[in-house]
Length: 166
Image 1 (cartoon, helix red, strand yellow):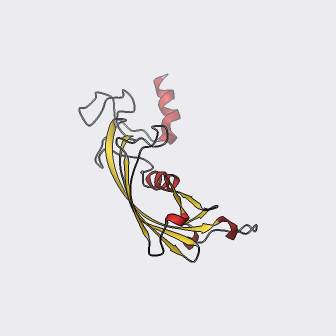
Image 2 (cartoon, one colour; image 1 turned 90 degrees about the horizontal axis):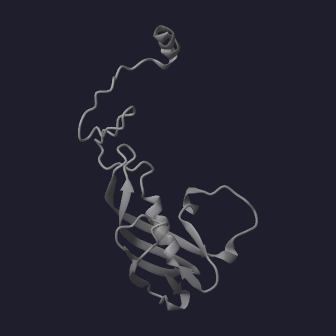
Image 3 (cartoon, helix red, strand yellow; image 1 turned 30 degrees about the vertical axis):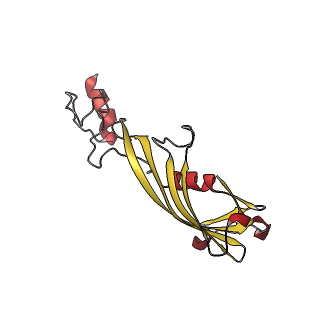
């Protein structure tokens, strides 16, 4: 979704966006909904609001697919690309929510996609109490138990166990 900077009035522009992404980009169940306010301040564009999406993710423990609703706040400042210097420097905390625009157009699709991806857990879980699967037989421990031996051996003593088995 591209917005011309000339379309943003001096007071601000409120947008209600419903955007579809390809399945390869973000695992969406339905279109993303975003409520954004764009405000011009001395050449900068301040974007605030929220992004809402329903995703289909795979649980990191039991490997089952589950749905998760994400409500991500948006607070980003766009600066003209011409402001970037050629010197390299380490970003400060204030610069982490900073983006750049070139020309007279602002593409919000990248911003929306980025906010969704940043709010997906690194290891998504279907439930905080998910027991996962058995590492030996693969049984889903949420739905039943397995008959695998659960005897834990100190990894440093693993060599001695192999000697006893001979």
